[in-house]
Amino acid sequence: MAALGTAVSAADGSSAAHEHELRVLYEIIHTVNSTLDLEQVLGAIVRLVNDAIVAHATYIFLSEDRGRRIVLRAASEHYAHLSGRVSMAAGEGIAGWVLQNGQPVFIPEKALADPRIKYFPELEEEKYQSLVSVPLIAKGQRVIGVIALHAQAPRVFSSQDAAFLLHVASLVAYAVENARLYERTRRSLRELEQLSQLGGHIARAESVDELLAVAVEQALGLLGAESLRVYLLEPSGDRLRMRAASPGAPDGPDIVSLPELSGELQRTQASGGTLTSVLAGTLWGAATMRSALVAPLVAGDEVLGFLVARLAEDRRASEHARDLANSIASQTALGLKRLQLVERLAERNLIKDLFDALASGRSTAAIAAQARRLGIDASGPVVVAWALPAAIGGEASAAFLPAAEAFEAAALRDIPGALVDRAEDALRLLAPALAGDSVLERIEAIAAAVPDSLTVGISNVCSGPGACAAGFTEAQQAARALPVLRPGERHLRYDQLGVYKYLLRVPPGDPVRDKHADALRVLADHDRRRNARLLQTLEEFLRQRGHVGETARALYVHPNTLRQRLRRIEELTGLDARESDWLVLEVALKLQRLEEVYPPGHTT
Image (cartoon, rainbow, N blue to C red):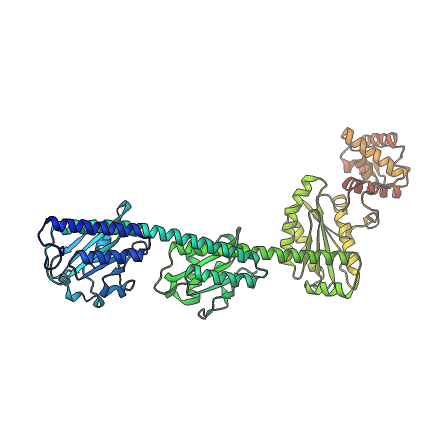
């Protein structure tokens, strides 16, 4: 052949030429099966094709970016240095046209006159008259690249030329698929190993700064990014603060305001598009959008911040890169959440110790200093609130916890400087009372808004060293009295207790023993067994100061019915309600009510 053809013979169909082509094909098969390194395979195939065919240049292009571009990945020795530097969009140039259409192109002469040609001066295409480009077709008829040959002299290609090149293209496609599969597997293993190492580093981190420094360093290598930043969401929910950045990262704002996204950040796990445009545009301008990666730091359903990476300007952020960034961000978020929980647990222990010290009446310089570190001046003025389950029993205790969590969240949000100690069966709150009654009103509003499975007692405003001890006692007593004094209500101030201020000094669960108390227990037992209302009748009779008509109206019964009930009470207990010491009887009755709410053996 003068230009394109076998080196052994130009005679179409020559047996020698056929045998030579078979030897070349066998050598290509051997090369394909001898290594999985894609660069080695492509370089060897280019050399074999060049040796087998009298062509002045051989190129292998592979598709990238999901078939949107085709890039030179191997070439004859004279042009090998251009590998990776020459590319075309799908449909652009002869190679791009073959990629898009999946059909070979044979141009016997005047190749540059073809309207599909895209001229590259560095490839010296003005030297060549004829060319052939054949698609590399993988499984599923996917076109994954193009093999192209150029010759200086015009040439009419034979069917044998075409068949040989199609065979070569088939082997190249097989080699590319195998090498890419191997490289993907090897890369996945590398990434899994690096992600595992990252997880280990994150698990061992003892501070947020240490954790983020490790995450930035590891993410740079995994993503192949030029720069990387980590922004954490501030408690307000509408600002991001930069907490870590890679060395040499381009200048950018330390704080990014996102008022328009604050609601979305609180409600969702922040999907990519909108956030990418806002964050990347804010940091680097709209021109970098294609090479930007933004991954939310999400733990559970809580958005903690964002990992923002910038790739090289000529790289588009692939789906794989986005998945990888999300994996890194997820591990980082879980690490941050762990540190937050550890810090929160340590702070809770400090708060509990402080509350126990203040409730016991201890007032030392160390306790005052601890209170100041936690953000409150315990010497006052302060207010104490104490929340208890609204009823006794397992179901009530189970319902108490979510209500207490809601109360705590609202108190910390709405009462500046408040501290909360929450346990399984009680909640204590200490709040500055600089605004006087407004703090009491805020506590009442919070108690009214949360689920009705808790009751809240509120102390008077306390001031001075040691005053907190009285505040804790007042708040607890108000919470204990609420179900008895105002059934169904949610909160009670200590100064609304009345005579219960004195009755509640009797230890809970420690029954008073006298004839009045014993008689009332008999009455209460009778009511439970007979589903009667004698204890309620006696209580109302005392409230109405012994007036039969008023008591009957309050109970919605006839006066004769009331008289019958009073006689029955006397028969059961020996007490004549009309002749007894009403003060003693009423006090005993209130103690009976407390005993019903807090039975013997129960402590609060």
